Length: 389
Ligand code: SOE
Image 1 (cartoon, helix red, strand yellow):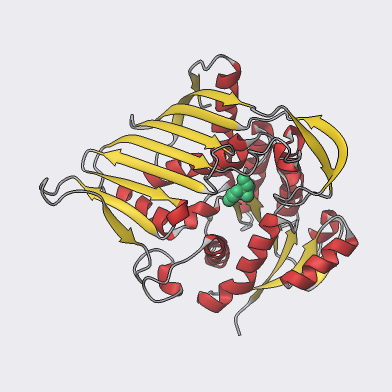
Image 2 (cartoon, rainbow, N blue to C red):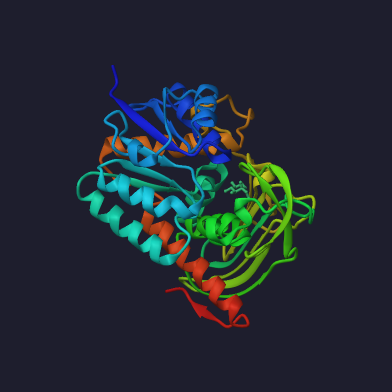
């Protein structure tokens, strides 16, 4: 019998559902040294949390995360709440000796992220592990892209072009859900989806951003208020409206360690683009291109080949020796969004049982938070060049 690790999850909306699916399926597809048990689900409403626990497969329910982090049947605390509660829950859980998986962005401010990273570093000295949930690192094609860059297949890196394009708030009548509220989410498209492309760019290239120059915009400044909105769903209208105090779109250029130039675009106003997380990297010896809307494909151009043979080649990233892919289906049968979360909890469980620090760490989350802060500072200061602290 394998050891069992109890999981307590806080939050059961969109991310909570995605994480539940991962905890439920991971042991069926990956040979793990320890298996997770979906011990406790925590949410504010007893009734809605009980219904979600039943639907998603959690054994027990709590309505106060402070109780959850004390429970003996919980060894991992999985935080799937809006950013305004990440720091408090994560620090309490780490202090109580629980491993922590925390949704992105790590926090709503650099100060909170610093406190979380410090708590994580201290906890690691006690064998307590933490990880921030930048799930796109676990798309097989993205992991393969990193491998190709690390192997030197692109040579000297010159350009990174990253975009995250969605369109779910194009309608000005779409309500002011928590992702559009600064107090809850920290920022708008920037923190919600810009954080993903910052992490993806730094992960794929293995280089951090050193400075940025940015523009942000809020296209729709007033939106209807709604009650009971969950995830990306609107809830029921109250009849009143509220002010949008976050960005709808963020554009910035930046420089990476080693000198490569980078551009980033994060928007929820790209009509027709649903979840287009895209990245292209150009180096002296080749290029890579990826679009999440075709997530099983990676495009690779080998510039060392003779001109007559060169050109972008489509790699279908479903072979047994591609990252993660071998655990699933025969070649060509493809994976989806939910698999990224399964890979994430697989790597987290593996690191916990190996006694190693998983990545992305809270320090990686803090680094992204510093970029977000630099983007906001630059945009507020007429796009002036702003160093990432
Ligand atoms: C909404 O923009 C959202 O759900 C993000 O919050 C997630 O991080 C991203 O994976 C999909 O889009």
